[in-house]
Length: 273
Image 1 (cartoon, rainbow, N blue to C red):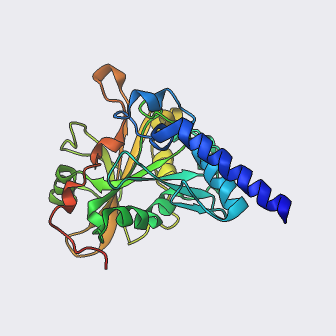
Image 2 (cartoon, rainbow, N blue to C red):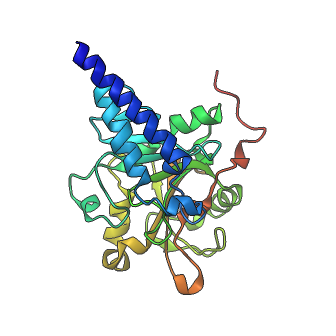
């Protein structure tokens, strides 16, 4: 018993030391808008999840500094200390990003469904229940991300994006199509997915299977899933894709469609009891 207590004490001391030395940089995995410090530490997020959260979950049953760790399904939820509400869904296995070929395996987990399940941690930070059409999830392209570990951003959708998608929902169908309007200055491709959950519909695979361009270079792609409440009252999602084009200044940062200030929540929705 004494040796076990000593091991735990030593581990906690090591955790405290690592957190103090790495600071907030380790928990910030933003894309094109991330601070320079995050880009200078491309493995920071992996060290937090694997070196701290996962190890401590196994050792003492606590997920800190993560908000949550699911050992069985293999993911962690990380709070962004630099934002009001954002959380990140991070696999506990080493996966580089959107281009990792293991995401296309038949038995690959649907991390997007896990991210949608994890929106409760976003709502906890928001302090209120949030309608599905105010929530978005995004992954950036290889050239726009700052971290070399797969992570999905979960936060509020930008108000202009929400309004544009609702206004043009009749133009978005069950097959990928190029939108006839811009979202934050970019012309995305889109598909409508019906149903309250993604289930086994994995956005990584939906894009890969539908696009030869994506199959040739998945790392150049970015994906965004926006919760939807369609005109007939049915729930669903808008799935959006764009491709990085450095020549035109498009870095493929779908995270730009999220609003980390959560303007859509101002004076709306009752606080969570």
